Length: 460
Image (cartoon, rainbow, N blue to C red; front, side, top):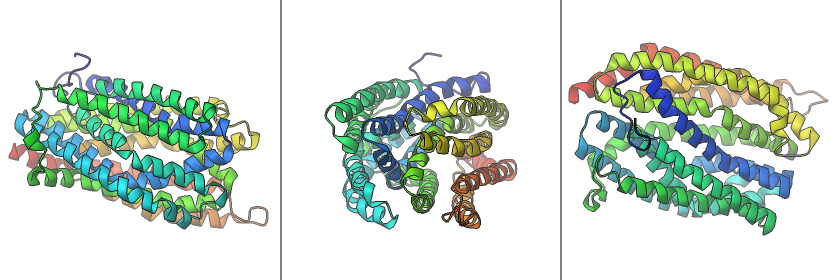
């Protein structure tokens, strides 16, 4: 297996191929997570806890505006992996060109709409007056420069669909290193504050996008990139929307639920907001194996369904899911043992460190279950069934999580805790993850992904 060439996951030992594909993707996800984490560390250390809270409070709104890229990226990865598996070169080429065009359109939309809605949404969430200006500045800069991040995410999805997770990793590592340097220069030396970390992120993501585009244009042995095919094609746009829309809708609804919960978070004040930012940054790293294995399973299932190898999909899914759960268990133990040291990277405030670690202890029990949800959902998406994971996510993120968080916090209100126990917000999340894993397992065993795969095979 050559390092910088597409990986054919239709042959060889399934788990070995999945793990080999997952490792560079995991490292890439770690690097991408460093974007936001380094932002938080730099502003927390050089500007203060309120600046740390500001960067975190901007997150849910930023995620909401990025759902277009989420949908395009997932749809691109599925389409590309299936056409690659079926060895349909022209369809593969036109699908990739369609993804490039749709990304440009989505970027322009966010560049226009994002800055207009940033501050009104922050006010709607009762963002504290002490941090709202910083939040607004951060969001506007990110939205104006969104095209770099958008193209990297979509082109990364294309590369993963082709089985090449290494190239995306290398480009992202370069951009991450640049981001760390620029964060320090803009904030610690030039005193640009929250705006400095935003500009560092925009510039770094633009670099990763350019490198990914150069790689795509040189893969002439795999597909053809023609200017005439960049013109929107109804068939491929419909396929992209059909495959990517459910994931985009899922992310939109998830982001909306996070915004609603963020309003509850804000009610506890700046200290808890800052603690929540720290927890979510650490949580982002702990969740990376789940997301990486899930993305790998999408490519694995897509290529093998395209080749008509359903039994190979089943075998690989079982073994890879257990492998992913083992990886998550080890990481969870390490987090519990060394969690306080990780929290101290973000702040010197002892109260903030202890509060963050307490919240992390609550979340720890749920991480292994997330591996089940992500791996099995990835298989369903790769087979073309993107709707079932969407409904499961809506049920858990909205119908269960949001009311449960408010109810559990409300039930713990006392004279000593007039706002309730903030830990109940995280306990509600663990309950949600548990229910989600159970429903996903049932859907995988008895769901419609097999029927969707059979239809795709018959069409092929």
